[in-house]
Image 1 (tube, one colour):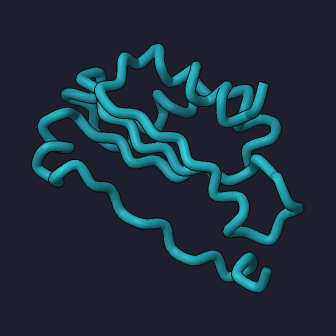
Image 2: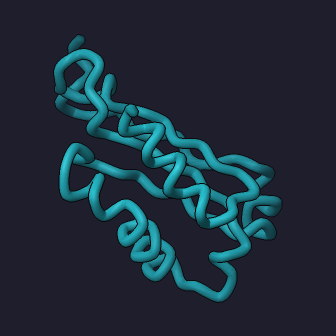
Length: 103
């Protein structure tokens, strides 16, 4: 099973209304087909009442095995349904990596 699939399956436990897990490894200086850099956008009622740092800690605990192993970087965009609606259902784009743009 791919790292991306494991992340998606584990985050499903948070009952997301919206979830995307994007492998952004190709944007970094890593071998082809790597699974080391991910961006997660997750919308869940479970984030209601949690400050951003607590939301991040929740994700880190769910993905502890992946973060201890193959995942080098994890960009998190975590919203309640109300925050997601206020954003128009969009999340920020990832910046270009200084070490990976030369391929």
